[in-house]
Length: 350
Ligand code: NAP
Ligand code: ZN
View 1 (cartoon, rainbow, N blue to C red):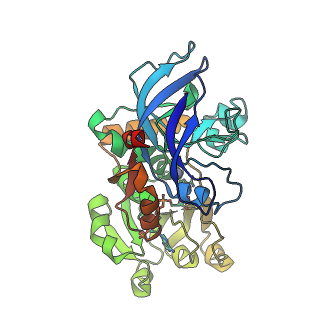
View 2: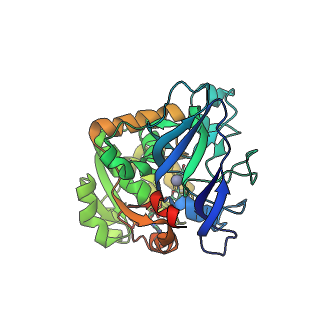
View 3: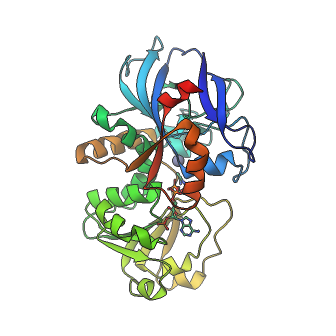
């Protein structure tokens, strides 16, 4: 079927309305009428070809929520009308060690919701800035939040799981002091989740204007990283730092904040590398530098259920699809509290 979408034909062109096709649902497929789609900084990196390998036309969007509008003959877990979500993964090999462990995000053949290989036209996947999507049921998530919160649930599908997974992996909880660096879409979810897990949370931001706001999100303290004296007063205080920053920056200033045996996990994925960290900043306190990418499907469902139980959703600013180019410019200025979400009903107008 043909549906309306918003995407770009080249990295140096703005996004515009376009028609795309979605496959007829196969036996194991779920067709979803998309209500809302969150806007992730990865969408910008991809559509503007800041990372290698963008295929055009590019329709971004991997924070998808909506209702099931059709199911294939063999689908048992979902029925018409169910509230569901789709995150960053729409396929994987389904039989490797990672897939067997429910870590499809680390499968060598993981297919991203956009810009991934597919037999469907045009030969690469097209994302959630669109009216409908068709996805194998294995990669469809159940939403248990009240329907009124649906738009604010959308960002959980990427920003939520990308911060939840490392917080769980490094066993963040009561008694831990956790720094969250970069208070954007990912960072604001990191604060909410680490707080709900019982940690003492410190927001580390470049934006003086976010100091008060971070406390409202659940941070216990805020540090403005441009202030060297303030940073120095937090030396050796942190057990774990979750770094969500989308641009290259000085990692050494952050290593100094870790205790002995502390870990900093990078989830931010800048287009150009960070300046190389000083080895002495790691070896003198047995500190670790790590990375983490989204999360597997079972953990994404666990995160959604955790958020439903704890009443956690994203703080969002709703936009129409034709406002996306302005939204990108504002994100690049760190001017969003804290996630743009596209009302996909607005795509109807073209
Ligand atoms: P975002 O909403 O734009 O937030 C990024 C935040 O980083 C900004 O709000 C700002 O926070 C801070 N920042 C920006 N430029 C900075 C600079 N030059 N120096 C220091 N801080 C700066 O982006 P997002 O959607 O949260 O995504 C963040 C990054 O994570 C992107 O690179 C994205 O591609 C990546 N990502 C990775 C995964 C994964 O699986 N690992 C998943 C999703 C996204 P302050 O104003 O508080 O300083
Ligand atoms: Zn994302």
